[in-house]
Length: 155
Image 1 (cartoon, rainbow, N blue to C red):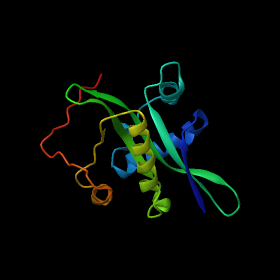
Image 2 (cartoon, helix red, strand yellow):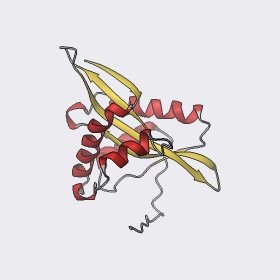
Image 3 (cartoon, rainbow, N blue to C red):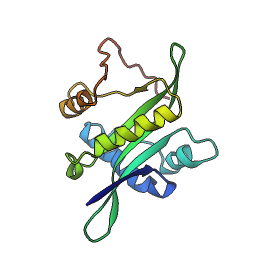
């Protein structure tokens, strides 16, 4: 099986939404996925996109290519540091884990962040998600900020 990491295209959006929902189920919050599909597509591929993504496409022995993972990010501005990449979602389907896809996606994110001259990449991980935490530790140079509390106001 071959794996290709590529920039997401609009035609990937249905599969990306499936992966986002799969991630929400894993994180025990499927009811939190409330984004309208058309809004999702427009936010990524409309006149003023606010997010970008890479997908991992895996081709099986029969030649069928399926998106098995995604890394969705956007630009965040830090008044202390400048422009950073914020990784909103990284998800690899359960059946495709352990094949190095997550590392390939991060390599692509690192390449993109350096090309855009971002000063950092940041993301969140749930404190109970030991597999993800252990994976991130293997990336090297990852700092975990236990002192911060997330705040949200919903409208």
